[in-house]
Length: 169
Length: 442
Image (tube, rainbow over all chains, first blue to last red; front, top):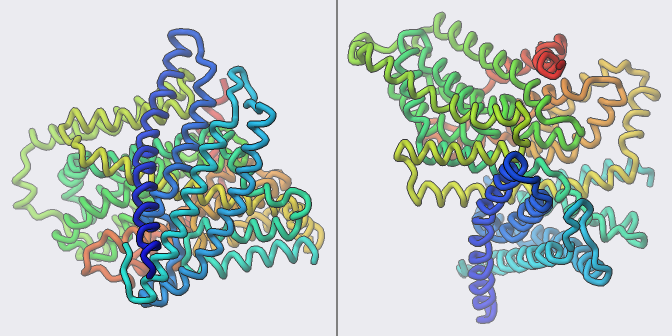
């Protein structure tokens, strides 16, 4: 494989790993926000920002963590046949079907970018008392989807390399 | 093309692509966006996939998902359940098949502390399985017990599957959880009766603990071990009492549960950086897997909505085929079981439930009751080949002397018991509905 593919795979994997590890700890921030919410409701005045904040955090958690979870290879596969194939067959089929996956993510990104642009232009806010701006969370989603696409491309390149008898991982 | 034909070809295309072994969320999403672009590409069809993420954001109880997953991993990674297992081991050792029966009790307690079956599987396979094999329990019996027992995790509260169902059916989670309690305990009792009878007839399946081994445990030791049982009750109460009394909301109670598990691990001296890191990492991996599948499946469901597939299905069953509503229900359960054998449970829930739940409602059935039927069907799906979540976990965790064929054969009697339980709940809806009705009467 050409040298730039090697560099691409290395950088993408490293970047997604770091962001994914960061996302992993968002879970505990989410816990803190929810605890504060119940504490404030019973001891102080109810906090108006916690519910939306929790929703944003959960979305950030799985959008930014998605690429790392692909690295951990946790996504479910229906491996009735898959598990019986040789590594080469697996790599060939994967290299074809992952294009469908990337296409899905591409359409997702298109919708995300358009929605983010709309949110920035119109100053869209979320319903409720707190009325937070929507563009920050939508931008995070765009970033998460781009990371997913990059990770899938990296997986695609690794599969191609495997077919040529090279190992990039 | 008629909408029905489109819906069917989408389903067919999805199945073919899923069998390619590619990541499920990608294939479901791919079929969804291709259909959306083709059907409504000129009228915002490209937007459907992303719009689902905003819908997902609005599903507040979804936040419980990573919490319960984290809780389950802390419990299994910190090996907090070791003492629990020893307690059942000592107390049930003298009964025929007693260790297997003790394992079912263990699974019930673990189910009350987490919302999926993964933790139960992990604990069963790492603690109970080697002990039972060492004592010459029949390997088919042992693997069956662990798989069946751990599937109780999704029926006994807290249950992640019922949270997801609650969001689709728009029913209160608390009521659904209460509805799951008695059917869950009933099923556990049925497993126990089955094990006891089998081992009574053929003692070699589950030999009684030897007199020598029993004599080694003093009465004081037996009493001391009982205190291990306090831990799950403590965690369960810390989580459920504030929720049921209305002090905290569902999501907050799940946070309390997760923290209680961490606290228990610290107090018992079982918490380490490795345990914490592994739990957090697995939680991220599993939660992301769930959420990306849900996101893709929602897009798929939105297209079925746009095609008005529910009305088409209802018309087909009630008007074209002249079936009565019970026949329709039974057909639905059968197709559900069939689909469950080759679809992942999350995908099954998010694709099939939006189609079935309105239909069940339109037929005049109780949606709380149907939630329990749905969950039991999912449990069966968890355990039936070719695609059973618990089968895969078992294969990954079991020692090499247990072959895949053993695992497949081991589940047969337990699946039969589960289908019997399903039939009982269908015939006597009160098994599910009595408890929530009692508690929600005031």
